[in-house]
Length: 219
Image (tube, rainbow, N blue to C red; front, side, top):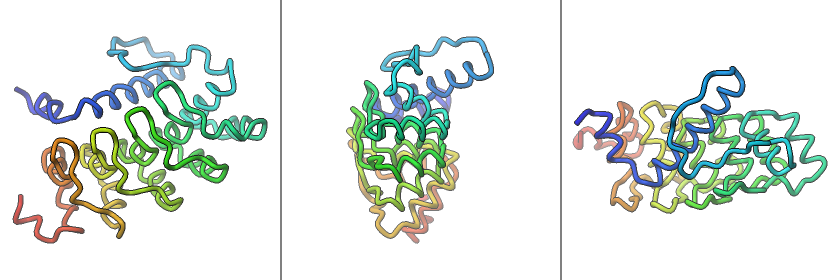
C-alpha cells in the first residue's frame, strides 16, 4: 500500500466527503474561469448551481465562493436576509468565503450579520472550512469575531483536527495553537487527538510543542 493510500485510509468519511465537495467546487471555478476541459470526479453529495445567477440565494452563494465582493454587497443591500442562506448541504456564504479564503468577503459577511456558528449537515462551522484548507487569514477573522475554536463536527473533528490533517497548514496550526482558548487534547470519534493526526500527516507536528513541551518524547 502506498503512503498516499495509507493517508486516505485515515480520513473519516466526513472528511472525505468534504474534501471531494470542495475539490469539486474549486475545479469547477477553475474550469469556468479558464475554460479547462472537464474531469471525472465522483459527484456524490455535490450539488452545483447550473444557473448561479438565476436567483438571489444561489447568486450570493456563488459570489461568496468566488470572491466577488461587489456582488455580495449589492445583493445584501437589496436583501440583508441573504447573509445566512444555505445550500442543500447547509453551507452559508460565510462557509464558502472561508474555504476559498476570500478574506475580504469573510470580513464583510461578518460585519453584516454572517453567522459564525452556522452548521452544515455534517455540523461544520465556518471555522472548520477555513482551517481544513489552511486559510489562516479567514480563520483569524472568525476567531476575532468570537468563533468557537473547539467546535466539533458530526465526526468529532475540531478545527485543530482538520488543520492537522493538512500537511501544508503551518500558518493555521500556529494560529490555533497560540490561542489560549484552545483545548488541544480533545478527541474525535476515532479517539484521536489533533496531535495524533499531525504526526501522521505532516512535518509540522512539532508545532504542538507550543502547547505540549514534551512532544519530543512522543515522536
